[in-house]
Image (cartoon, rainbow, N blue to C red; front, side):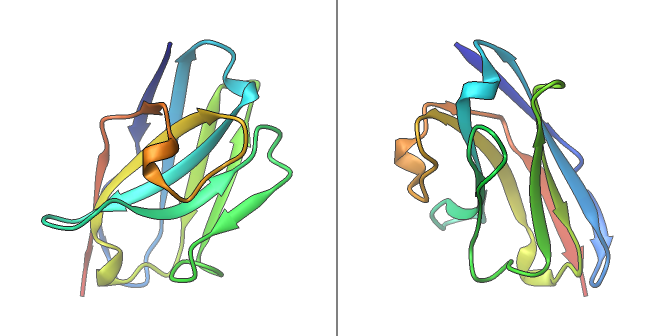
Length: 123
């Protein structure tokens, strides 16, 4: 089993920055791919960014390319999502998720989920 806990969400003005963290415990986290997803009320959970087990491959949704950066520190069992130039449309609950094997943009392929952290961007 893997337990994931997100932190770092909050309220920020448009143009500002936040760094989300996803801390893991349980089985060997360094073998897992991790994805960040976000969800707004009444909508599906959308892929934001993904990272492979080593951190050598990074993936981004078009909507966040150039603004968000995903990284991981396997010595700390933590994945980060640095979010810059935030826009009101980035407002959502952000979730991290982990899976064995390659990353995926499909949330249904992930085995482990955190509880989510709210990000609110004011205009």
